[in-house]
Image (cartoon, rainbow, N blue to C red; front, side):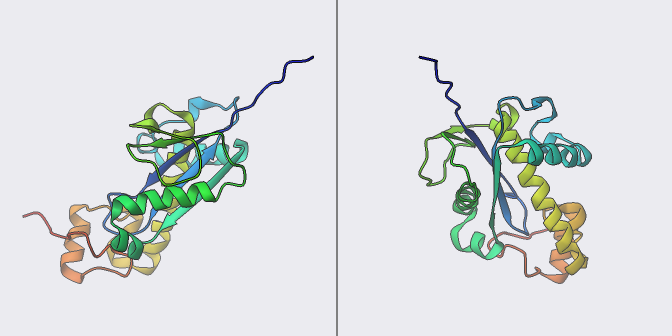
Length: 191
């Protein structure tokens, strides 16, 4: 009798957008094939914009499956950033069409999903499927923030991505929050 080869689908999940004052939290889930060019992967924050753009094209074209989950500012204000992040991860997992054998989560906490889960602190620095999820989440969120900058032109979302830069906080102090700002966050400008 021939030996059966068992394939195990590993899914990585990571998020982008916990720290900004504006915009959504976006999570991605990715199942990579065994023979994936891992040399293009890294923590999304350590890659240049161009390298992320190149990597995301390869990830999406070669991955077995991926999903994206969104949590919008009003939900972040309702649930708090911790639970909103877990909800985005749950939505990213739910967006998969193939259910994995094991889910690898970046961080200390796992979302409530019906799957075998492992958490990996700083997993986006050493777990390929989490790195791929990190890249998709950041690239997806950044693209949306660029689009928001066309609507809310005063806030420079295309450059700060909603993060609390000094310039962003000065505009907030002068003009107040836009409809995509998180109202439970402090907007104080350092003196």
